Image (cartoon, rainbow, N blue to C red):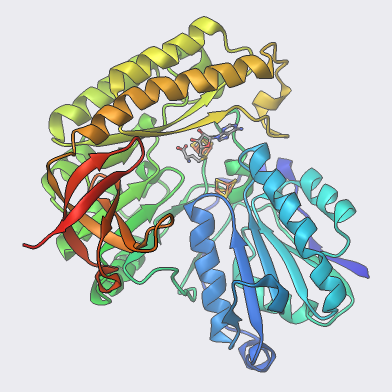
Amino acid sequence: MKTKIINYPDLIEARNRQKSDTIFLDASTAHLKEMEELGKGKKYYIHTYGCQANVRDEETMRGMLESVNFTKTEDPSEADVIIINTCAVRENAEDKVYGEIGNLKKYRRINKKLVLGICGCMVEQPEILQILQDKFPEVNLYFGTHEIDQLLDLIYETYNSDIRLISIKSKQGEVIENKLVKRNNEYKAFVNIIYGCNKFCTYCIVPYTRGKERSRKFNEIMDEVRELKKANYQEITFLGQNVNAYGKDLNEGYDFADILEEAAKMGIPRIRFTTSHPWDFSSKMIEIIAKYDNIMKCIHLPVQSGNDEVLKLMGRRYTREHYLNLVKEMREKIPGLSLSTDIIVGFPNETEEQFKDTLSLVDIVKYESAFTFIYSPRRGTPAAKIDDNVSYADKSRRFKELVKHLEVNIEKDAKSYVGGTYKVLVDGASKTDKDMLSGYTESNKLVHFKGDESLIGKIVNVKINESHTYSLLGELVNE
Ligand code: SAH
Ligand code: SF4
Ligand code: F3S
């Protein structure tokens, strides 16, 4: 098999952004005619790892594939196109992908025409791309996060051919509108508002894999929200690596608070957003969140560490004091606020005292939920070059200690629901018990209760009878 390289990624190119304006494009529909024939009677399988940005990219790929008659399958053995949409944020995310490709590669021997494609953040790193090529000669398509809109052309060229195609350009990125989309859900939707990231936290690979910060135009976003409202969507989540930065790269005069307010006025029952960097969370945003009932009182505010020296080494651009003051303002102005966070333990050379500062911050803030990670060096990032004197055993111990601290408040918070009645957006049958439904409260607590599947996609009242650390048990209440 010959390898055809259209573009190859380069981390230095990915880091060096130009100040030039973002290019706005409309999604191309070229090749649709030939592809319509190709897709007939054929199936695709996509598995997505990583964050909501990747989930939303999957929805675009599904929209494109289904527009040319491919149908979805959950069974890779019957697929004509297999796509693994990868995440590079930590080593364990990458290990899962190596494992899955190992399982899927046999299908290329069984079906010689098959497209086995790898996309997403992992392949944006040249060294990882090389490892993948060496390890898995069966893979015949690699494309990057900036090439999603070319998916149909790439499949057209790869299917039933003897070439391996690599199309991954490390570019700052464009904003492509009117992309096709097949959403994973009929009542909850993700809406991109800003792509990429300019923060370059020293441990993080995302700014390299996703390009520079670039906002969608205000009207494009609002058109999408209007369509979702018309289609009776119950919940939308605005997406960005840092939604607070919305609009700073445009000269339209709108900021993220304007997005929230305009969407709230359209009357979508639940509006959420993720993620917010603590550095540029404005008082105006806090006021708008407090003002509208349909903006959920949930803020995901990653802190990463409670120690100023570590925060500085991480390049986070805020201090512990700034963070705590922000939390104070939020708690004062937004009654019923539910705060969640991301925390990294074991950043290179983190001392026991510095770690204790994270514990004390957790005790002060009293998060309602949290994602915790052990630091994972990412090749090409500044932090990966620091010699680290902390053993993995110490990091694991700290990790467990941190989770214990967090769970004190998470459990207490869960208990406070017992006896109360809450609005729950019903998601589906519970994963553990088919007779039970599950859904989320406005504050994002997972609730299980008995009910009929006809309630899926609706907002119902549930009285909470029992609490566990990470879920609640309740019963349906008639209004
Ligand atoms: N844009 C978001 C986060 C995206 S990555 C934000 O800044 O809030 C999600 C989380 O993964 C981060 O908040 C961080 O806690 C974690 N993370 C990122 N890089 C990591 C690394 N190298 N090792 C461990 N955790 C990491
Ligand atoms: Fe990564 Fe920092 Fe950007 Fe979040 S803000 S994606 S942690 S660089
Ligand atoms: Fe992972 Fe890329 Fe998202 S690295 S967390 S899928 S932006």
